[in-house]
Image 1 (cartoon, rainbow, N blue to C red):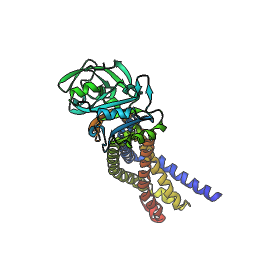
Image 2 (image 1 turned 90 degrees about the horizontal axis):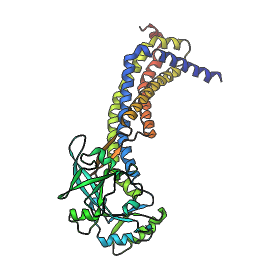
Image 3 (image 1 turned 90 degrees about the vertical axis):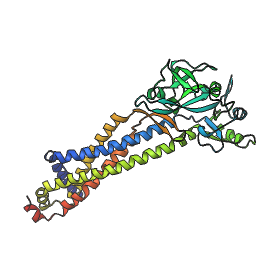
Image 4 (image 1 turned 180 degrees about the vertical axis):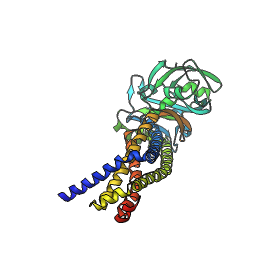
Length: 399
């Protein structure tokens, strides 16, 4: 066992000497740390946007919830259902009921322009008309300030995310809906879901304001249980009176997040790859400087019997440790700067703004530090091989 133990001792000794020499190379070491920290910080920061957006969509759908749209529609914006069709949906098997009737809400979805608080530029904000059963269908909705709008009244309530991002939505303010100004009477939360980006009002009042007659765009329902979804779906899709598509709410919102999540993730990796190339060159420069500064030391160790493999591995370990330190620094800064940072972005499926909070998750931090480790290994490999191949006699003569 002396061979492996001796080899490990050699690696440990060379690595220790290398780390002790770091103060002599503060400039190049600091540049490498900052470069790798920048890569990890940007990667984690950008991906936290996608994670936050996806999380906001994921919590919007409960396992016992379903949504019904016109067949072929990929969002509520391009869907359309008549009043009679919405009643057939509400009476379908599997829909939960309470004392007031089936837990089904026929809904209208329109877009209004409101200025963003930060920039003053106009943004598409969703205005949703709902029926009284909507509060039972979406049982995660809770009023936190003010009151519920009056049914049959020109009043609105606003999601807390919309209040934070868009101007003119505080309680007591008025928003222009069609030709009328409607007062904001309450603010609600929805467990961080997409509904917090919306403004809600009575569907019948909204139909009148936009001359929509008795039409709707979707029906959201609460089922007796998640297992009731398939019988519910089969009864509607096989009904000759209807031409609809039925989705679980969780699946619908997951599909709504796909385009934006893919776009942000792709952009994040493109930026990270470009920055990583610069960080790799920084790591190469640092480790080549380390080899140049320790040429005679390495040659002396080789002359004393230290193996070339031990030299390579020790320099790789040194480079990896520097990279991990930079990665940890970048990940920590990304967490402090981005986690729970609130913003809004366009949902290209509905062409409306969705407010959400960035999510710097443990999985993203691990991914970022893994990138740092890869940069460190690549940056340390070639200088380590050069050090191990230095002819001992000529290296001892180098200054």
